[in-house]
Length: 171
Image 1 (cartoon, helix red, strand yellow):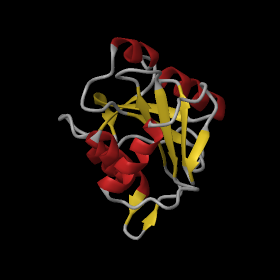
Image 2 (cartoon, one colour):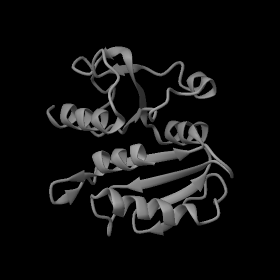
Image 3 (cartoon, helix red, strand yellow):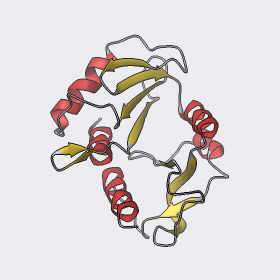
């Protein structure tokens, strides 16, 4: 859980504020029960502090709720939603929404060489695993997506998110 909480923190929070141009979707697909996705929407998020305990409390409260049907995003608190589903559903939704998708992977092109294909307003989605590699099924789903590398060493997810923000913010 701590890996996911740090990713949320890195994706959404800046000093004295929230990134309104960033969203993060957590895929909770292990353990008992149906697969669940938790979506933090930076544009509307409010009432969450950038500390791990606050974010953990939000996630724990969501886990007590029944999993909504796939594709039905229930808002738990302002800017935090959950729904059923896994990576396959997220990829389908992103494709419909025109999100330019990339996978973070050591063997990809350097982030320094990366540029979005579309205009400046293009929505870009980055996929990264937690402390475990993508499963075989997940790897098959993302096999044809472009790879972006942040270097030759595997980094922790929250560090990857911070590096991506720095890279994108610097352009």
